[in-house]
Structures are given as structure tokens and as C-alpha cells.
Image (cartoon, rainbow, N blue to C red):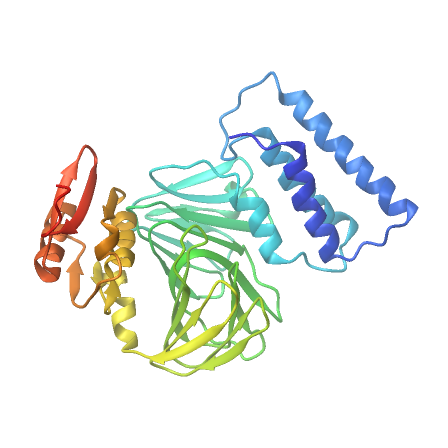
Length: 357
């Protein structure tokens, strides 16, 4: 998929807003020079087809613009990680395998259920393979993309450990700053933060931030789904702040639900249930059939739908994700008292009283 120049300018304009660039002559000249660089970059490569992590040359130009703005002209301030993540994530090609991207053009493949570990000497261990710092192209931010039907694990440079759910992207620096640690998440992770009293840890998403010192919690924030975002705390304490300014502090066995308009409400839960997906078990947690179907569709990487008249029915229990999709749907149907059928490559759940099937 190709990006238009207007798309590039739109994202870069957000960077300009963040850094509060004054509309003076010198700033305008520099912005014009940036557009010329992007245009030249695209024109110079238009006749070549290169297989890269980025899906188009426009994406490379976009990243170059982000880096130029963030690291070149505005060295005194760090760019907002949410903006950087938007630059990096939007242009990654879809793949069936887990991708670790350490620099534009350098992508490493990770096996399903595999682990990526950032070592103190600057190297990276990917599954059983160790890459020295000399073998890695240095970039300010790395990202790991876990596609549907896959699970991953990431150990950051400070020792913080992440379990990464299907359909999730995480953007993070190779090395954290001394006084602040930030990552960006689009999807779901379980994270066990290495405690550091001098450097708070912040998990940023499109709709909220979670700030901690050292704790373990689950973050669910899929930007491409309609369901509300959730944070469930296993131990420690976290502070959740939405983009609307709403703020709440969580204690263990509390869940914060963040709505699309930024409103936060909390409820008491059994937090241990919300981490079972890291062990291959999907807890239903009295969720709706619609949400459960969406989860199963992501876990198995197949299309699963349900009739609208059963979508809001709630159901409890657990599903073993180690079993095949048909067995999982059969057990779900028996528990909920409805039927399931396969049409082409998709599965449909429907009421036993339905006259459509």
C-alpha cells in the first residue's frame, strides 16, 4: 500500500505541533526543505522495486522525516512516542510470522511463542540466535509485530518482561532514558515491569497512558476494534490517565475500562483470570458472544462471526486455545446453547431457533 505525500505531511504536521514550532521564516524554510527531500526520495526510487520491511518508499520517507524533525532540528526535546509509533507502525507489511524490526530495512523473524531478549552488551537474542551489537543497525526505536494466530515474548533492556498477544504491535527504544521508560502498545500485553524508583515506566496507547514504578498488569487496547480498552492489575499500583484527562489509580484485582470518549470506570475482578491467555487459555469472564468471537478470530486467525441476536449474550467459562478452532467453537456452542456452522473459510454462530441456516 502506498502513502500519498499528503499523508506524510499530515503526520509530520502533528510532529510540528508537538514541538511547538513557531511560524517564522527559518522554520518555514526548513519545512519546505523537508518536503523537497521527501519528493526527491520518492522520485529517485520510483523506478526500483525493493523488498523491505516498509511497504513503500513513502514509508521510508515518512520515517526519515520523523527522525529529521525529532533528532535533527529539535534535539533538545524527545518526540512524543505516540507520534513516533504512528510513523513506524502504519507502514509495516502484514506477515504470517512475528517480525522484529530494529531499523528501517532490517527485520528479524521470530518463531511463534519465541522470545526476544535485549542484552546489556547491546546485543539481541532472538530465540536461540544471538546477534552482537555490530550486527544490528542502530535506530532510536525498535518494534515487534505479533500477527493474528501468534504469541510472543519480549524482554526489554531494563529487564522488563512482556507477553504479547495475537494482533499486537509494540514500539520501544533499544535503551531507555535514565529518568523515564516508555513503550507504545497497539493490542494486548501482559507486562511485568522491573522496578526502578528513579525511572517511572509508562505504557502509552492511542487512548490512555499507564504509569508505574514496578508492577504486573495486563493492557488491552486494540485500535482496530470497537470494544473498550482495559487495564487489569495483578500486583503493585498503577495510574491510568485517558486522553480526555480522566485519571484513576488501580490496586490489585481492579480493572479499569476506558471508553472511546475517555471516560474511565473501575470494577473488581479476579485478576489472575486475565493473564491466562499467556498460558494458552481464553477466560470468558462473563463476556459477550460478540467479544468472545472477536478474540477467537484473532487467536486462530480465521473469520468467525455470529448472528446479531446472540451477539450480546454473556457467557462464563474458559476455552483451551491449544485445541483446534472447530473444537473450541463446538465447546463454546454447547456452553451457550447455540449452533455453529462453517461456510467456505468462515465460521458462523447462530441461535438454534434461527430459520436462516
